[in-house]
Length: 284
Image 1 (cartoon, rainbow, N blue to C red):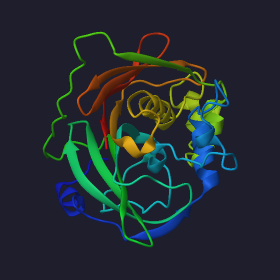
Image 2 (image 1 turned 45 degrees about the horizontal axis):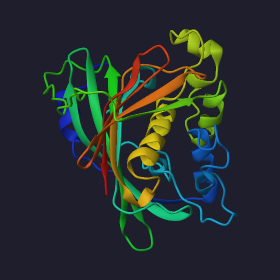
Image 3 (image 1 turned 120 degrees about the horizontal axis):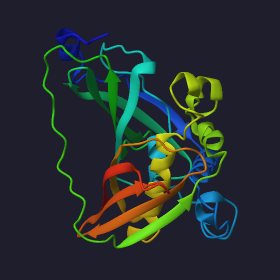
Image 4 (image 1 turned 90 degrees about the horizontal axis):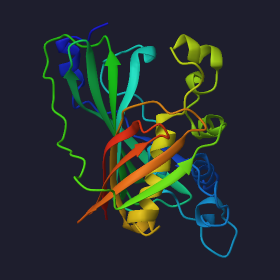
């Protein structure tokens, strides 16, 4: 069902109530394992996968995209979740997330664009330290809603991005597990598309697919180690678009082109298909 101009106008700029919640060391550890930390070399990423060794626990930067409470949906727009595709995701860090935290989160509907047969809804969350008010991160999601366009609104424009005209400075290869989606769903996304073969077939897939945010987490891990010297304190921003689906068991190749302030990147599968595109990572 198409959005109306009145509902779009009433929703853009709308904010949710502020919600308070926590995340724990266990949540951060589970996320790290779910995006492949320690999978190929169990003793090389112990600072992300353990909490009781000689080194203090650290948090993978992309954890902020799934951590903490959910503030709900701002505005008055409604859509059928079966018509939703996660188009893009980004986050910006202002301080380094800690393994245990009490936080506040507030959501905002930043923009809504009319693509004719579909709409693009851009949402963001601000995550702050509940005790000090310090802003920890801002996360942003771009949602493609099939059937919701056609009210005559602005189409919007993509930020400019070009693949560098040279060979990648580095390529990092990770192989996902055949049960990767079953592990990743424990971080919060229980959509049966990623676990139920019957549901996946009804959605047009031969078998359950991997969460896009899991592929995103693998990719962010590669950039952390390659560009930020495995130091979360140096990790600033990260944005990418989801372009193709990934199956559990696929091999991911992250191609990295270094820039003055970070890197550009793409992630592809063993077939050469680009599955994470238009990637930008910045240092902090």
